[in-house]
Length: 210
Image (cartoon, rainbow, N blue to C red; front, top):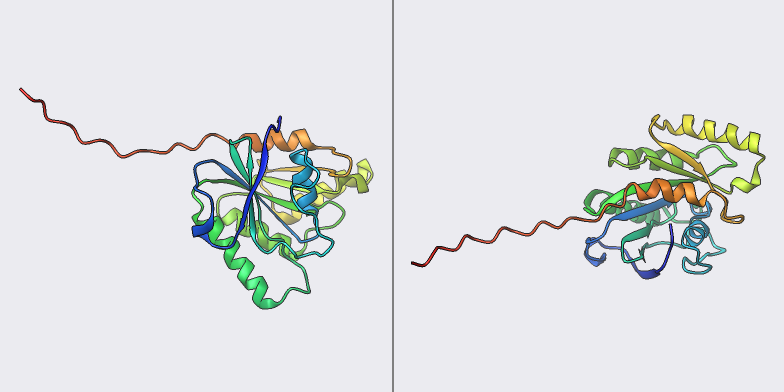
């Protein structure tokens, strides 16, 4: 995909703050250290659009990016960071849950996992949550440059099995560092980006004047 325009719209915590749902949305979910910001920058061919923090768990809001005036790419708060308080984790979980349940323009939620490791308990729980809301056809395995080809293939199979992915769901390896695997990701995402159709109420019929 050619990215002509990519704009950070804002960071939000409440449904009423989100942009008007007039374009399709693709959301990204994953652990705090999975490389979500790096992947977003790589997909959008930007260096610093999504801020990369040295402190895991810093993203505590839902961040919206307007892409080509055609769709929103949405960065969900990272999970699984041990130093975050239980109260904060519950707050983020509630925020994400409301977004998944009530955002009418949401077309797909992509789970990011680190290809070097088996999915954590949090990863499995998040994927089940995503599936329960009718999403989960795409899983992205980040940091693919860290493994040999044969090891990567083994890990992708393990991740697929441990997440309980369906045969139709795809798992795509990506390296943000080497910018490898970007086009297959866009090919998978584009299937969910049909324009939003807004139905207007029918106008009352006018009586003919003789």
